[in-house]
Length: 401
Image (tube, rainbow, N blue to C red; front, side, top):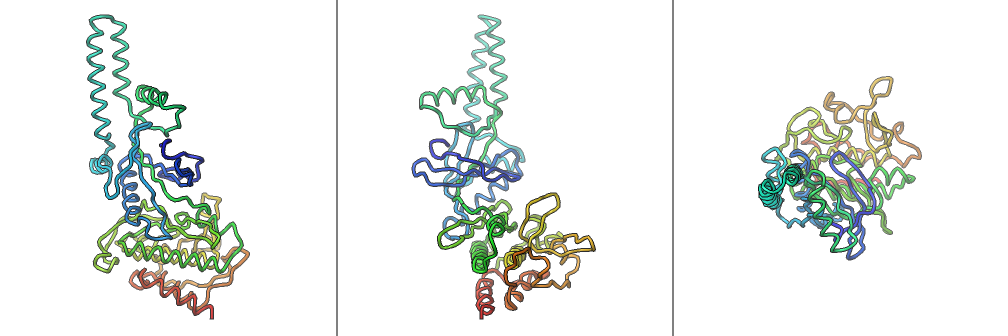
């Protein structure tokens, strides 16, 4: 790792991995490096989904995060680039078997070392009892060896080799990891970017247009994101304005729907996503399609355009998101949950009492109509992604007049 990239500082930590700001050694370009420890088959399956989706998007859309490369770690300094279009077989095997397996080459090397130590142990038994005890201890240590660490830059090439040998004998248990090297976004996530600045109508319109374009692109490739929310939208600050990047494809699914021209035919059953952005059908445990992404996008649009925020229970961080107030205590209910319980619930767009000051101008009539369509309780009533772009542009243009 240290010959290719350097890790500068941690910039994010989630349930599944850690993201670092790093640099490419040869060029000095700044990148984001995400470490995904492959400790169990369930996590590995999510990582492979993310890797497959990011490879499919390649560098073809400015509003989707770019994956530069992926490396597989099998030891302290055992990393190799993964070839495009192929998944690491040892990780696929882990998912299929339901247990983490070692890379084949590491298992073979371990077997050779074990056989050597067993021969040493046998010879030592004839020469010296003390040597026998030491050889047995060595054998036990090697049998338990399973390493996991972040590589550090060595002082020199010679010392690097001896350090590696020492790690292989004395290191902690092995744990495979994936390292995803991606473009670095200097503006943080969408929450951080928008809520740290005064409302800007032009920026708001730019954000929703870019988000719409990204989702249309993903759906066109047959990719349903399934976890669209401000935390998973990153921002690159440029002289021409913010550039939005949809990221985090761990819950995404790829399907053949795009080939038939109708991604909505592909159905999913896993209940996944984040409470305040999940569609009603997901809340209800029903099968659902890519139209669930349109609902999540509608929540995002509404929150961005009206600067609606909330603080989730157990958290202190203000977040962008729309909701329904319940009871005198003002308990916040996610839109999807409220619409699942009451499909005929009338949403009030725009709403002034929820918006955090300073307030941007409320969306116009055309935009309000589009938002209501995106947030329809019936998935079939929501506009598909390939039609959403034109409707959004038309609504913004109509309201501006």
